[in-house]
Amino acid sequence: MYETQVSVVIVNYNVKYFVEQCLYSVQAATQGWDVDIYVVDNHSTDGSVEYLRPLFPDVTFIENKENVGFAKANNQAFRICKGEYVLMLNPDTVIGEESLRSLCYFMDEHPAAGAIGLKMLNGNGVFLAESKRSFPTPWVSFCKLFGLSKLFPDSPKYASYALPYLSPDEQHEVDVLSGAFMLMRHDALEKTGLLDEDFFMYGEDID
Image: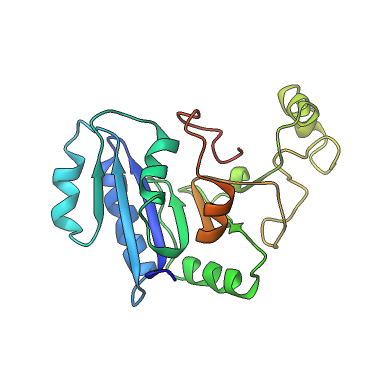
């Protein structure tokens, strides 16, 4: 049904060196796989495409004549990608060599799962809380804005946005995955619809 195992979609805007390192990590993580990789360039002015294309001849570059935003740019690649799984990946990320393989195996073993994220770390190896989140309902947002979530980090009632009481080293079913790294089942993406293009940047992953 699908031509490749995984499609990888990266949106770029003036961060060509980040994208370069990201693509090298993707190549290492997908070695021996059938993959299709897309870089959607949102009208960068730093010569991103001219710099990257010779380095990565197997990558498909989509060049926009204006900055159309994160959601719309991702959708451009989503509409033409060929993988059974689709990875939405931020340009400033480096993925571990076994990360993608492990997640795809998990998805194969759990056909009811529509998408999966992972434990994200910053450049210093510190866990990023946005790896897992709840829906920002009025109550959840209130607790976050007024500091209740920090006062009671172990409370599901007051700290449910970033879910700090859930171990980052264990598997959990959560409401929201980060758009920085979101591996989606292609057929689930088609059933639910693409990203809402009214979100220029941020919030599209929650939606």
